[in-house]
Length: 268
Image (cartoon, rainbow, N blue to C red; front, side, top):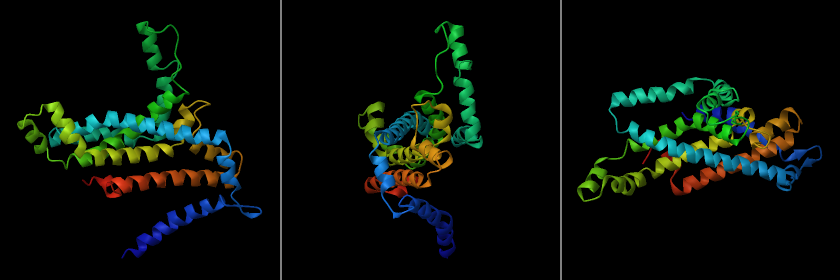
C-alpha cells in the first residue's frame, strides 16, 4: 500500500534533487570537484554562507522569544479564545509572501508610516534607513516565520500536565520558579522543533532577503538564483544547493540525535 506514496516521492523529489546535485559534480570534462573547491577557496562565498547561517539563527532566536509567550497563552485560555487567537494567527498565512514583503517595503520606506510617525513626534530630524539592510530582512522574516514557531510550541505545550506546575507551587515554589523549573524544561522538545523548522526555512528564503536586504545582505539562496539566471552556471548553482542541503541535513541529524524527529509533530 505504500508503493504509490514511495513512487510519488521518488518521482517528484528524489529524482529531481539527485539530478540537480549531480550537476555539481560534472562539467564538460566529466567528474569534477572544481565547483566545491571554488566555493571553499573563496572568502566571498564563505562569507555568504556565514551571513545565511548567522541571520537565520538570529531570526530563529527572535521567533522563539516572541512565540513562546503566545504559545503559552494559547494553552492557558479557554478553547473558544484559543480558536480565535489561532484564527488571527493563521490569517497572515493566507496572504502571499510577495505581497507581505512589498507591504514591509512600504512600511519601512523613508515615506513609510514608521518614519512619518517618528518625524511627527520630533524624535528624528530626517527619515532613517529602515529598508535595504539586515534589520529589514530580520523584520520581514520574523513576521513570516513566527507563526510556525508558535504552532510548534503549542503542539507540545498542550500535552503538558499543568498540574505539575500546581504541585510545585504547593510544595513551596513561587510561580516564577515553578514555571522555569518545571514547565520550561518540559517544553524543550517543542523549543527544539520550532527552532529547527524556523532555522531550516530561514536558510532557504529568497524573496525577503532579495527585496528587503541591501548590497551586503547576500544569502546563499540569492547566490544560487544569480548563478542560474544571470551567470547561467548550473554546475556551480548545483554545488551551492548541495552545500545548503548538506547543512540542513546535518542540522536534522543533530536534532534527531538529541530529541528525535518525531517531536516536530508535537510529540513529548
